[in-house]
Length: 111
Length: 114
Image (tube, rainbow over all chains, first blue to last red; front, side):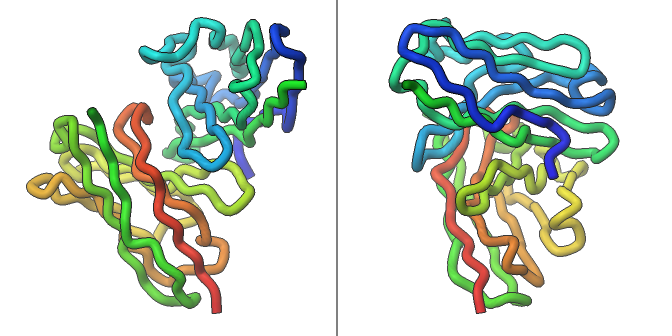
């Protein structure tokens, strides 16, 4: 089982704001390791959406933003669009496991 | 542009071995750490293994430790995953991923079935 917990699903109407949470522990997020977010559209490989907690790679719209506090992190999508319907995963490093860990994943549905 | 192309996926029987390959281009492979990440059908992402650029440091998920080996040939810009004693729960799409997880291959499917 994953050590990073995410809510299974969130939904919103076009234009709304949705928040995806990622809860970890003192051996991963709380230890100061960078937190990354990935978007996976149906049938495709994951895509890096946010790196190092709150940075967007070039080409990622600014309606995606990330934050981290304590042992948790959040991904916010403002101005939700139909093409944002996808699975989202958080990821960090875990010192107790000596390896990388992914969150359980959150399915975003655009109503 | 960065390109990662995996190959080697197949349908295999439990207990057998398989080697996955990933050919990299568009960046300096020999100075980049690399990872393998997998995704079972209908499931989430699972990190599998990581190698440093020089193979001095390697990490493995507990689920594959002792059975899988990650290695690379920097002269061929190629990353490998040697899979041994495979099990049904190893069935997944295996992705090759660049150092900071910013570039992913298209994946190669491994199906373990008797």
